[in-house]
Length: 348
Image (tube, rainbow, N blue to C red):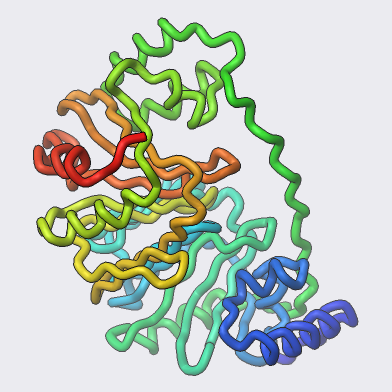
């Protein structure tokens, strides 16, 4: 199926070609920002060549991911990239909210704004890539050398859009208003009492909404001993300590459309420029340390005892990365985890 590019798309394709010649190592997400467009629109200029537009109910497509076998799941936001290899297992949906609960690939999917899907071939690297209505990447799935390429081809054929035209309609994202430093009209005593009465970490989101608090505002008003800031450079110290101890941890990376979780050890740690990296065989993480505006150690009560997390927040107040000790419902957190944080982080 050949695609006919509109004049605007042809112009964008030409500009991207020029940009790639001048900046051959720049990733498509950064190129889109530099060119004043979205990643989805930039990717769509390849339709008819190395990109195919997908259509249909993406929930049904995701339910078939297990057929691909061993793949690499990628979820990212502006500051951190989370790549986990494994198999899509135990996939379920409740309306547009999905769960993938495999031993290796662990996802929370929010498909209400998964607007565009593409099958992409880049130098014999094959992937399925999904974007929201703003043209931002929601989630990507890459084949590995162990994947079932025939199942991939069949899946692409099944969900291929009949119309491969590239005139995507991408919504314009409004600028986020600056957050107030202090919470307005907060009943601090009631908020702290409800924090101390938490039974599940997931209830924390409800608590913030009830009191109309941003993440930073909530942490600044935490009960005594339940939240404190650490220096952002503590993250390298903590990564090294986790690696040395062989401690299994949970690493959460989220964007508005997906949360991806790694559970297990992290071993190979190194810094390259602003990026703090984990480069293990089945798990990679790329974290921009210079994006950390505030780093917090946060303690929340649950029915299984206190759960201790590290939360990284950017200058816009967005929490973009979380870390916990390995745990499951009904099992207390590892005692070594809060002890490691206490020993290997620098308090502010």
